[in-house]
Image (cartoon, rainbow, N blue to C red):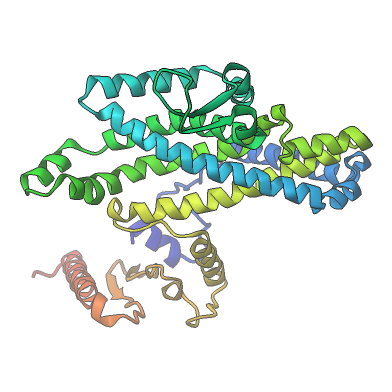
Length: 394
């Protein structure tokens, strides 16, 4: 504790923040922060008030269709497209990433051209091409290479590639191009010294990749991968172009019949928001798991933050529900003064030490001894000074 703060506590009748020489400590006001917070709070409250007071939102229609069977079936189809396309896309993207990192010029060039092509063509165009593939190739099969003699197996293209298959193929191939670059970037982010150290130990290539490279690369891959999955959920809405009844297409069909556009769009928005929220929570815990090797202390979970905040607020009231109050109960260090210096009317000084009521005596015993020694030394020096002032020698 500084001498100024000690004077603030020991000088009766002195205003808060005033020190011995008449100076006053003025806290920073942060007027800009308060103004912006007020504006943001006003906008949020105004929006919530309009949601509650504007009858045109038609919340009764929203409640009627939110759990409608047709909407739930379309939601399941949206999730199926997301899961299948995501798995195929990231599996194929991993292979393409390996090709891009390969020393083979053929594999490297093939992966580069694939990524360039599928990132250049819009997703809607890809889905339409796959859906109309029967126009180019009426039949597909296996047989003699470079001929149309499918003597082994043959089937009509329009029967094999349905709307669901065309949507899945288009989404998967499109996602693989982006996933390949995400995985490649994650692998390249691993420090080269780690790979050289593992190679110097004689570890096999497979163990080096799965035990050293991949866990470190995952920290860079996971955030971007979840970002792509969230984009894929919303990207499934483009399959309405092939009349596949996913979530957005279904609400479109319904509001084209009853003209309740806004409530039905709100149904789709809320379901997309729920899926995104679940994925965001999963992303947080997956990132937290892969951060174990990078940080000394894992960041607290939302539940742990809430418990810590409640404990701090309760401690401010001086009544801790768990351990009987005080900062110690909240896990905070003891902020009580350890040494207080008091000036008396005769100009002499005395020093006293306020030992904290530390429950963990074994941990803080060394610190208490140091504080006592310093307080004794300062008190001795002050007594010597007072003795000289009164004309004595020492």
